[in-house]
Amino acid sequence: MAGTTHVSYTANLLKYMSLDQKGSAIAEYIWIDSTGGVRSKSKTLPKIPPSGEFKIEDLPEWNFDGSSTGQAPGDNSDVYLRPVAIFPDPFRKAPNILVICECWNADGTPNKYNYRYEANKLMEAHKDQKPWFGLEQEYTLLDMNDRPYGWPVGGFPGPQGPYYCGVGAGKVFCRDIVEAHFKACLYAGIKISGTNAEVMPAQWEFQVGPCEGIELGDHLWCARFLLNRIAEEFGAKITLHPKPIPGDWNGAGLHSNFSSEDMRKPGGMKHIEAAIKKLEGRHKEHIAVYGEDNTLRLTGRHETGSIDAFTYGVANRGASIRIPREVGHKGYGYFEDRRPASNADPYQITGILMETIFGGVDDAKKA
Image 1: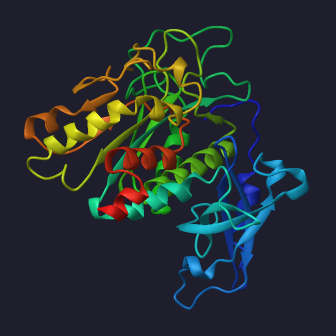
Image 2 (image 1 turned 180 degrees about the horizontal axis):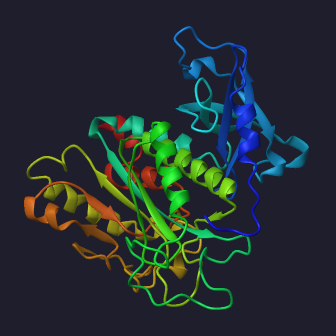
């Protein structure tokens, strides 16, 4: 990727990456901060299990300064990291690992920004529904001046049209970052199902899923970490802002595909329609957790529905909820919630979908 302000010392780094670790491993503890960004720090694990594979119970709880991440006050700043998911590390390679963590307060309560905790309770309460999720993460690549990568200085590229799934110079930008991210996700065991260039130049999308239950949030957050970490090496920035460039340009979303076991069986359309009816009744509650600045994106233009109205339809990309054409034809499958913004938290999205469609934790206990 061309760039005049970024200097790479990869060749120097590689000399050290191959050094013997003397029987120890490095764990990169990853967590989500108060603004929906990823943070991480590295920990030495002095002993590798005989199997060569770490399990959650092998990993110690750790802590960090929550006052520096907006997650705790300065006079009581310790926030604790509890490992919940492990992935192979594509940067340091085996036996090193990436570790997704939940954030907990010193008094034993989940941190205010620990959205995984409540989502996981809902997943466990309704696990008999076998919920499958697939989320489509759109994002925009920026240069170090916060300009979409490859856009002309002081000007704009040609109108949208040739960029979506485009091929060729001038149509796509930063494909090297996208390719590196795809391979890194596969190495890490993330259930990434595809990637493509999006409608606005310098905008891309990758898809994660299908995943069952809380796994989707864990995999998508790890994929976000990898994306930011890889772009760092190429001297580019990642923004998840849903409308990074005002004007006649597509925004960025996190389209969320959902199905339960009943929806995936013949005759499942009645379950899909019942779920959509419940979603309609809680439109405002969903919008409240579907991302910051989503009003700039959900305008009813650029393949979106209006933020003030709930709509649905078969193959309609201008609706709040889209039922794919194939699903409408077969009469079973899944639906797509097109409302979430690209910066929304996948734990919050999947959690509120479960709560709205199947009820809260207490409702599951009564059933």
